Image 1 (cartoon, helix red, strand yellow):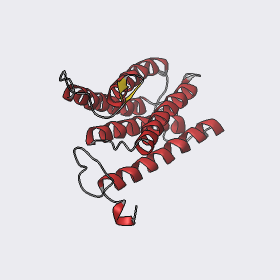
Image 2 (cartoon, helix red, strand yellow; image 1 turned 120 degrees about the vertical axis):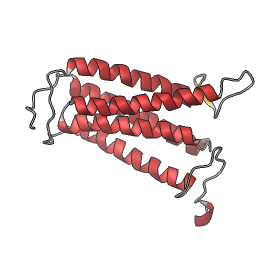
Image 3 (cartoon, rainbow, N blue to C red; image 1 turned 180 degrees about the vertical axis):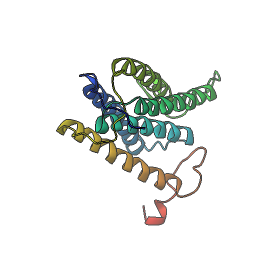
Length: 190
């Protein structure tokens, strides 16, 4: 079955680019915080980052191939999964004396910010699905502008950096529940 390609809403490319830039910025902030403050992410934190990567991939597809309900569905599925993981982590630290996992940013833990971001992504997709209701699926890549291309490359490089960091932290096995060191760095003299 072939779908006719129809024009997206004029603001669709800009908004998808800004949303992908926000996700990329969140991933860069989390990775920089991990390195600068030596705060290794727990397995639930890594799942939240993976959900952000998957949501970003859906937005990247919108930029590359044009807005599509299938791409927004990918963002929605990733945001729902990420929201569940972030809410689970929040519930783990609801005890009165529990300070939570990791440090805070502007008074909230990163997993709380992640839940806010995932809920915002869900709302964003609802709005964009209403705005881009004329759009259909298109399997032909479209020419991305310089800014959109730069955002896509920045996202890609960020994802590769996260994959490398996770591999250094966990190796090829399961990640420790409460990581305190990178498993692979001592093996390489680090």
